[in-house]
Structures are given as structure tokens and as C-alpha cells.
Length: 418
Ligand code: PMP
Image (cartoon, rainbow, N blue to C red; front, side, top):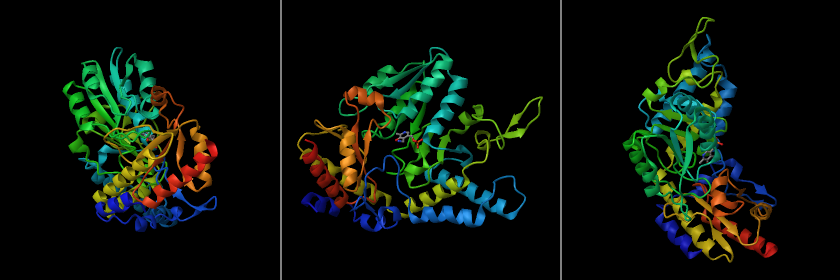
């Protein structure tokens, strides 16, 4: 380990990433003849044994449909499913678990708000602000509802370092801005957005705020009441939980006033051909059989995360990023994309004369998994004038040795490609 790594290791409160890594069985394998180095955590995180066990225990012992059964398995499944909702509410410090709606993930959460709240509140001339570094899932749903309502979707500028321009944002605000929807952390760059200022300024102008927490939720504790956001969304699979489950938190009076997003079983109170009445929160927004095992798996993931020293885990991730950034500066022809002062867990870069996907392939051949491409942030790539980047993204189970392996593999690839 290099001097810098040794030094930062001392300063990271002794977080034992090597030990934590052992909780994740998938990480203990060879890929293309090399021990796997998994650096694609922004795309999805791996699952600890505790999550795998919780899902498999559910299917082996408790599987049943929820809320409408008249037997013991249905009671057990329902109890576990609703306990999972309470676990999420506690994790986010939501005032009540009925404000926690299950979704398929971040994408569905944003679509739900855009379609239900936007469809019933936006009018011609209203404005929705998103940042220039949003994931497509926080752009397109707003464009879709804007097309129907005559509202407009505008981008808050981001400078060349990947920092959101707070002054420009403040200047954009007026009484026609009804919604501000931004990510807490950019998946393409790792920039941490000043959401406290964004929320305060938006509220001062009477706009609501949705925070896309997809890239933040795994990295530090979130308190939706302290944050004072109106909606918060994230995906279970980015928090060491299963795919197919996500969470939408919303302020109760907003959720109560919003029309259902989908119709079907569970979301109704009574149905007749003369008229249908809707169920209360949260069920009004949960038509059909939910992802029961997913919710239970997500609760197990939250238990796992909370069993760690989160401050130490965050310090460790920060040290990994600092170490990787330092090493990146030494690589000839490497240009970092995203150099904001406040960054989290993402090292995005291009190598002069090399297509990101060629580089990604050569890294994979050496057992190093990264993501290449536009990272579902095409407007941002257009701003930088590049087709995409190579993105290494870290989690607390990554080690300084993983970073060394990335740069050793990069060195080899560079010699082959340049
Ligand atoms: N927003 C951000 C910032 C993301 O990183 C992602 C996933 N890459 C999403 C939204 C979409 O998440 P999902 O595909 O889980 O719905």
C-alpha cells in the first residue's frame, strides 16, 4: 500500500473494509482469472449474506400474499412486509410509515410524483427545474408531464467542475416554478449537491422539492424531516438490498391530495360501476401484489447498514476517493470529469485517444469491474463534449488494494491502447 493509503487508513477511524467485504459472498470470486475488484457500486451495490438469507428465509417459510389472507402464512407475510415499511420510515426519520410508499425503484418514484402530482397540479406556463446533471429518470418523467400540461422543464446550470450554480438557480426562481427536482449526489460525477440551500430557496419561492437520493442513500444517514424535502426517492438495490424495490417518501398532505398513480387491487376502498373510492395511504399508491420479498430484503439491508459504524464507513469511502483521485493525477492523458470540491464515491474520467468502452473491456479482462458510457446523463455528456466516461464508484467494502488494482490495470490497458 502506498504511503498516502497507509496515512489515510490511519485517519479513517479504523474501518475494517477487508472484514466487511467478507459479508458479501459475491465479492469472493475470480473474474477472467483475477480476483474480482468491484467498482460499479453506483450502478448497483452487492448484497450481504444477511440480505440473501432474509429473502430466502421468506420464500422458504413465510411466502404468501399480503393484506387479504385468512391464514397464518398471510398474517406472517403481512406483518413482515409492514415491519419493513416501518424500518424504512425509521431509517429516513419519516414522521409516519404511511408516508413510505413502495415502488420499483427511484425511476418509478419520480414517475409517480411527476404523473400524479404533476398531472394534477401543473398548468401551462408552470416551470419545473431539474439540474443539468440529472439522471434521465429525473428528466424524462417531467418532460412527459410537461407535454401533457404545457409546463416547461428547465435545467439549472452546472459548471465545468460539475458544481451546481446556486446563484443561477436562485435567479431562475419565480412564482411559476412549482417543482424543483434534483439529485443529492450525481451518479455520473459524484458531485454532492447543496440540497439544504436548494430546498430553502425553493420553499421561499413556494416551490416543492423532490430529492433523488439514489446515489446518496448508501453513503450517509438521511433525515427527511431535517432535510425538509417534500419528496425523497431511492432504490433498494443501491443500498445493498434487492432489485425491484424502492421507496418514495412524501409529505402527508401532498400524498393525501394526490390522485392514485395506478388502478387495481389493494388501492381501492370500494369498487362499483357507479364509482370507486380509494384506499388510504400508503395503499392508495400500491395497486397490485407488491414485491414482498423485496421489501423484506430491503429491511434486512437497512439492518445491515445500521450495524456498521456509518461515520467510519463514510470516512473510509472518502479516503478511498482521495487516494484514487491522487493516483489519477499521475496517469498521463487521464482527465477527471467532475472535480467539484464536494464529491462522493465516484471517480469519472476519460483517457486521451481511448474510447471509454475499450478501456472498460480491458479492465474487465483484468478482473476490474467499472461502468463506461453516458451513465444515463446524456445532457451532461453533451455539455462536456464527450461520448461518455469510465466510472469507478466505491463502496465501504472496497479497499485501498482495490484502488491499486484499478490503476495497475489501467496502466496495462493504457500501454495496449495508446
Ligand atoms: N437517479 C440516479 C442519481 C441514479 O444514479 C439512478 C441509477 N443509476 C437512478 C436515478 C435510477 O435508479 P433505478 O434505475 O434504480 O430506478
